[in-house]
Image (tube, rainbow, N blue to C red; front, side, top):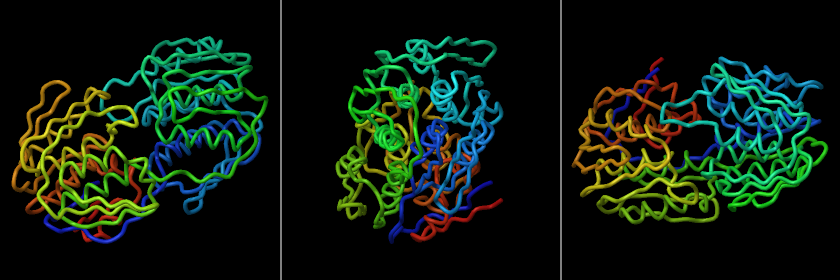
Length: 415
């Protein structure tokens, strides 16, 4: 699939942000540990959620999804082998490891796939499971882990990995004793998982700080929970307003989750006004270059770095982007060059010299976030563009072209 985009339109209006992809996928996995039905609200209609739905259904769960509400009913006996084809297609599938180990004491899973943005090993997950007493075997691209009952342990993460923090929180929820995760990730999605688990009857505290403490309980019940807004989608819409010289109100958002982006956009000359659950973004003066270093939260999110690169491509002066999380994140810049962007890449650093105007071109999305950035470039460019690989963008953005069209973008999906 592809998008056909006619550039040169200033976006204006109001857009509502969907539920957070990076939260709901993990909550779906956590629901496997419940003894009763879990209701998850504000669920976005995106392909990654469809994939995770398939994963937990293959493990025995019953899933009913109506509108933005999902009901997950776990089976009396969970399966232990995650479906290979689905796991290879989405890295977040690895999040079923902790729940299955904690609930049934065994899991067999292929090494996960996902976007090609760099090496993302699951070593931290497995190190934590071993510390909790699991026997972990890695052979021929598969992982098998077993434990009669996990034991609480103090686990030091060498890097504040979001996925490892989430998986170990889930494992600790039903472990015997107390699990302490040191150098834990601090993302808002971690807090969302803590709140969900505690609503199920778990005893978790410290999410959002560098140390998460989980006191194991014997069983977990159901929960009815509303997912936080997607801060990456919100950030994409904010940058879309600025790069097109428009004025957009981003509604149903948590501004405190986007402090790093708000500060950077203001530094570049954009107008940003914040209220309780909305952010107004506009460009009423020239946008200037900047320096961005991706960092774990609360630093600048790597998933929003491609959007800033898009904005920098038309800014006055030079910008420097330093990527510290994923080694192959810059693939999308090769496609931006086809639209006239002036880019120099040296290992983990990219230098972008802004041009007066990008030009329309045929480009291909290399990954989810890079694909969204190419759409931003196309909306700001002179002329028409084709963006191929829309199925990658569909992994993380609900009704992307409909929301942009509602703001005035001239964008059409071509099957």
